[in-house]
Image (cartoon, rainbow, N blue to C red; front, side, top):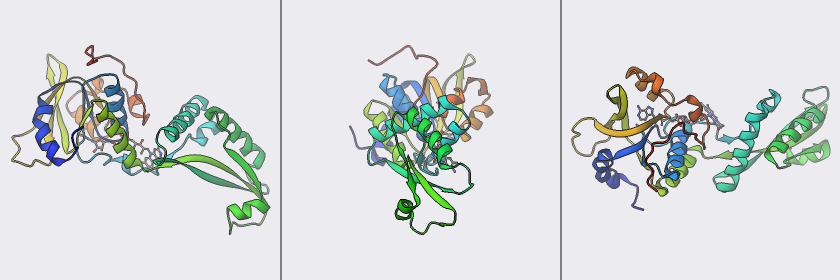
Length: 271
Ligand SMILES: Cc1cc2nc3c(=O)[nH]c(=O)nc-3n(C[C@H](O)[C@H](O)[C@H](O)COP(=O)(O)OP(=O)(O)OC[C@H]3O[C@@H](n4cnc5c(N)ncnc54)[C@H](O)[C@@H]3O)c2cc1C
């Protein structure tokens, strides 16, 4: 694979813009990267356009947690929790060193809620959904070693449980790298400014090179059979301004960082 750098970008840009794509993805955050990777794996000819740098948006500003969502269990949203904890386990297995276990300790004070039994029950369910036992109650004598300096008045002990943590921006880069290895392409510094239409159908986008090395001739047209706006706010605004709100992909596509479902096939697979 060619080096993925500024020289490559300058040289590749006209050629990539001239291609006919199966899928254009607007936005190079984790959702866009994940969608690009999944599309590339399915043999789609796909290009991602990011207006600034990859992971510039919320995907480099999160709290870096890869969590199953204990609060979903508490709310009874078991399906959502199951999906989340399984995704967490999959990421831990697929990206060791980039996605790492992170432990938490919940102290239990006399009369406080949730007590060790309720919390242990909640975590047993959480772990069962993940298919892995991952929590333990520590009585006070042991908890002192695990959490030195903790306030001890009324302290009964604490429960240790695990979720995971990552470097969110590096995770985006990793997924984009995997997408490129599968044949997907991604360009940064390309802001989508308009949707292109033919006979009322969207057939591509106009994008501005915001970092032109030579004087830019103006916005560049990219043709595509399908488009995903994974840029939550700005691109959605851009699409709406262009009057294409009903044509945007369902937001459900954009809420799962690593996976994407496609509602239609481009009908042209490369392999
Ligand atoms: C404070 C905070 C903490 C969070 N903590 C966690 C956490 O611990 N764990 C977790 O899993 N999730 C967390 N999240 C949620 C998570 O960060 C987001 O769900 C995720 O980053 C969304 O990714 P995205 O790709 O949809 O959006 P973004 O990462 O925002 O990507 C959208 C991209 O689209 C680009 N774009 C916009 N308009 C255009 C255009 N016209 N042309 C081209 N490109 C365009 C933007 O530049 C941007 O890079 C947190 C979110 C916040 C706000």
